[in-house]
Length: 427
Image 1 (spheres, rainbow, N blue to C red):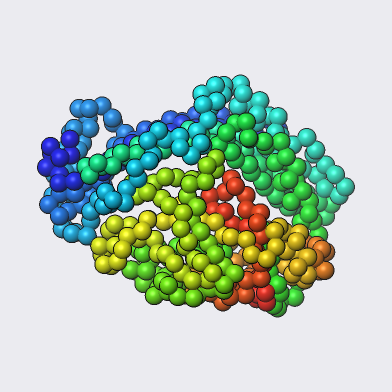
Image 2 (cartoon, one colour):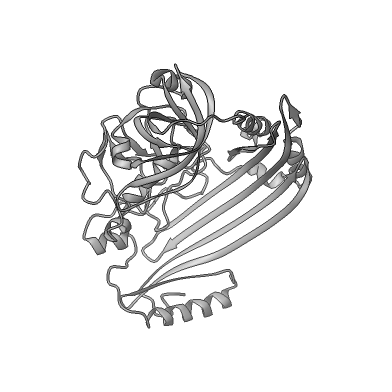
């Protein structure tokens, strides 16, 4: 239709999704939602010009009219010769069924409304009080979803991706004997119903809240920093963003002109592992249809890759790669898990949550609020809160002591427990 309407090239992507959610409040049903969505996004290239459009009116007559008007609109735009489809040699050829990654569960279609309500209620917290505390709020959500993405272009690309997801999240707020309130949250997710277990979410969230009771003020200074695996991506995401070609082209990256250079310590290796079977977040192709492959992003501290889509490759006159990191995995270094790393580090502050703050993408400077625990001799001695951790990402990663082998497979970024030396904390 796009070619018939006067486009020279086009790419279309059909996305279909469904999601059902049951929310509970203090162990009772609070809300039930169900939503379905389907839409086509189309990228149109005409007369050296480009535009992208989307619609959820999918009848043939509606699409024909929509695409014709879209092509007319593109022809009125300013020319941009850097816009193009991905080269056919780079596009995916092996995403034929959508189930290559084994993350679509046929059992999804058999889950009933009664099953969802039962799952939400059965996972609700049973314990409501303890020594010196009581639960004042329990907010939880069970959800399951199904997603399909079908992509084609006029250069012959055709690919399909499908996945299902079963999820549970809960947040517990308690009140201590002195009237102060503390909160903890936990979530679980799996692509297969048989692998999904949310029975311990409430207990874990409750423990996180109880463990925060009676925090102790800690003097400002330099401390060894251990970051729990559940929040460690906070220190990795800015690196990945800084490696995006758009950020580099805009002068908004602290990693400009670092490709092929030793910027980080030899202990730091981040691989992109986009095709791990059975794990949500894995994909065979990006939004351009470019095939994903396992490759080093940072290898032994050397920057090996920028994320460069077709447009930025033409604009910067550099080789294209893919538009972003699909499944970044920080490789183990030194010790395996939180307990081993704390024992190795000996003395410092364990961060279990980042509370606000900001980072400067152009300079790499950061300042984050944190909560967590003071530990000595590898053992937690008391909780801490209302502190700031500050520094610069390049300097911080230069002090890397260890990276575990304990990343949670249900997370998009596979980042383990991390440890750094002599980091600035202020109360």
